[in-house]
Length: 194
Image (cartoon, rainbow, N blue to C red; front, side, top):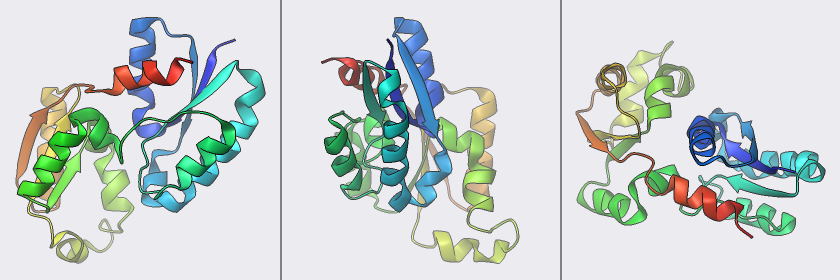
């Protein structure tokens, strides 16, 4: 039986690419990426899904970093005896924890984008924050930010246009750092090992 992977919806496509490339026998169960706007719900949703799929697979794993659960996700995975991705958030996985710490030490007002966030920016940020209806709130939401850094996994001209547009929408300059999948492939393989 394959391994069941409960995955953040923002990572699911990347994980599927890695699985196909490395011929990994996994079944991915993505949770809605908009859970990141309500991180207090992530652990509960992961718990429910693990209960639902655990008998369908020889093993299960969780493809989430902590993602703002402040340890609640770790409590769930300990209960189920599974592993999760390392780090506080996917930025650590893509760029490396040390690089993220370095960026934040140089400018704590950094707003990060990933390929997923670039593609879904209007829905994930503009609509979720209500800026589509109340654009005048933009400066209140983003007044403590000074720049946007796109941690690009698979950059294309189209994604760059979208990233630049996202930065313009929130009134911040854009920097691009090509990071690829970073540690995602390594961490996924580690999740699947005994």
